[in-house]
Image 1 (tube, helix red, strand yellow):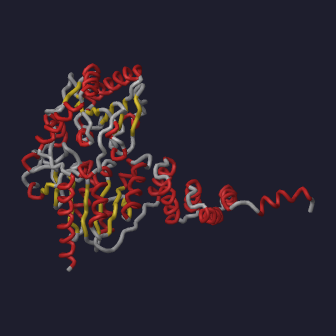
Image 2: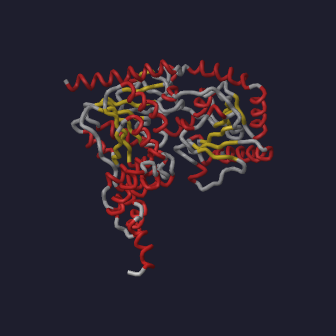
Image 3: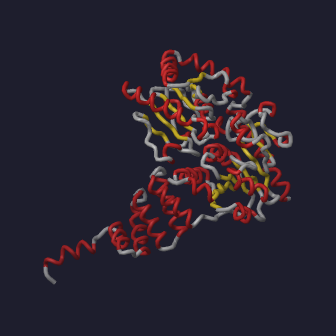
Amino acid sequence: MSLSAWPRLLRRWFRSARDRGDLARDRQRWTDAARHYRTHLHRHPQDFAIWVQLGHSLKEAGRIGEAIDAYRAGLAIDGDDADLLLHLRHLYQDHPPQRIGQGPAIIFLFNLLQDVGVARPLVYLAAEEFVAEICLLVSGEFLERDTTGLWIGELERMCRDTGATLTIQPTPERACGCLQGRSGVLIAASESNLEPHRYTHALFRSAPAGFTRITLQHGFECVGFLHNRDQSAAYGDHVFFAADVLCGWAEAEALTAMSATERAKLRVTGPTLALHERAGRAGGNGGLVCENLHSVRFGAANGRRDAFMEDVAAVSAILAERGEALTLRAHPGGRYFAEHGLAPPRGARTENRPLYKVDLAGFDYGISAPSTVLLDMMLAGLPVAVWNDPESPIDVSHYVGLHQVAGADEWLAFQQAVLQDPDAFLRQQADFLGRTGLLLDPTTVRTRFISVLTEACNLITARDQ
């Protein structure tokens, strides 16, 4: 053997496990690649990129369960990596995990993307307060809506934090099949006889008798609980539920859209958003504007959508010239700008993370068309204004008492007034919240939810005896 061959042989003999894995991967020897990657990870367990490569290799080798475990290990290191979240979403679409235990369980249903923010505080509360299996049951429609994988990543994070299991059931019939012979509590953040809730409604109607079914009021103005004029026009005034228990935000007298046949199911718990930990207001990050342009308020015929976008664009351009910040946040169920391929207004920053990951207290003020996000911002200590359209006025009857803006001039005047005297707006908002009749005290809300879940779990015990 010539001396010139020795360097090449030495490199081959002393090639690292990672390099061997890459070489096997490039040759599509997936089992060998996985073996080498595992060796590397035994020595370097925080190597995020190789956990991802291990997942890819195992997926190609047909070892789906192990591939999911590898991807999850990567998420434990970097839970926000967009590429990994997308890979996991695609894998779940092709191979939905079916794992679910056999004993009594508290099962949370996720069908709409916004269900995550509503149910999340209750998932953590259940894990802290109850010794029961906790399962996150995800619909096939949820995966289709979650085009980036961001929200399935949030559910995975919940599973890591709480020990919950995750199962994906493409249809309500499949979901019902996996519940046969089981007992427990089914909790939905969006359930009614309306078309957007067809998955959860169908599952609730067909669920085995051993389950107590709980529907959460998921917003301030919420179908079947409290309607604005546009909701009544779009959905009618007789919305009903298949749930045994309805967790509302206020007493029945304040929930004027709840039909008489449903009121016997009502338990006043307050909203789960009251369970969020709140930091003291700091400010300094400019204004936060929340769009919910998918709402029935913004029908194509009334021109409100164009009016809102024009106002945002005008204000953003003026603030950009001043060197001041404006942040635009999309509603998770709509993401209007992204879904329609529209660039954000000039000078506007975008914020698409879940609301519970956004430091609301860091903003100077918040603006939104009528929406529950106004409550989130008020509870975070932000001065807020309700956007309205002077040409086609929105029904803001449930928001009377809050400051309103229409057009760029009023918007900018509000900003200036907030910077000069924020406390005046905060006092106004405290009066508004007091008049709504909403149960918002965090301790009381927590106690009420524990009581509801305790009663439901006691029913499980009684049925099983």
